Length: 329
Image 1 (cartoon, rainbow, N blue to C red):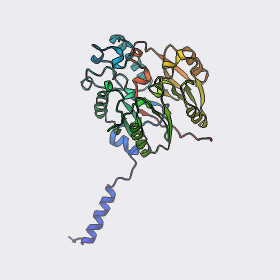
Image 2: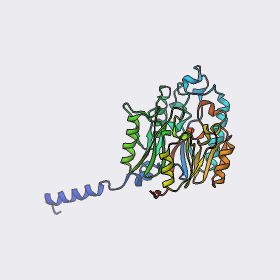
Image 3: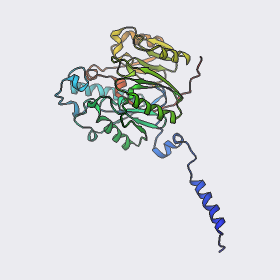
């Protein structure tokens, strides 16, 4: 057998190294490596998978006053579970895979964990795990993170150090543009960490919003309903948000009254032009339908006592991608 020279061996070894070297993009190989396309780059792409928490024993024996656990009122656990089950069925009937945070991962001092949107943001490269802006909710992110690990969702970033950032302080417009909400729940450092991570993933445009104290999260006054329809509450939404949506050709629907402001924008797009919206906001519903949006109403009378609704409950893990909007200056 002919012996190879050192030079030949070096060349063959280098060829092997070149063959083994990773040349692909993380997103391209995600289905093969991670078992699914765990990517989100809009609020309206066809919804494929979500993370939720069915209210469990953590809400059965709350002894603190509602305000001290960031809630509006005392809870009716069984009524909350019934509403949750109906929402879960609605998702499944519309082709959405619902993953649930496991009981074994939820501490008893996590009564707000039903609101998973605050815990996890989807991104093109996987989940961004929040760090909550109020101490009563701090342990919830660990429960969400454990469940994501079991599912196989890659974690692109976990907010750390002195940063706080809650999931609903980010809204995707498209692969290159997001709205970032800075406020009482998401501080300078947390926002910077999110921006740095998303810039690393290819996001180019960051629309900044200073969230007022009566807003808490962006989904209290902004909701994208269709490829060219957005719902805004004019008394809270700043002018720069109006301008950025108009530059991208959106038709703007405005929530007409303060009475409907609380949860009218707190909906979930199942696909472009089809949303699941909280029942009880007839004026806003009619305006959205006039704009061509199909509306499925869901009941959240009991869940809203805890301080949120369907969008708050739903962490998006997988959506179909949408085209990047052309911008007209």
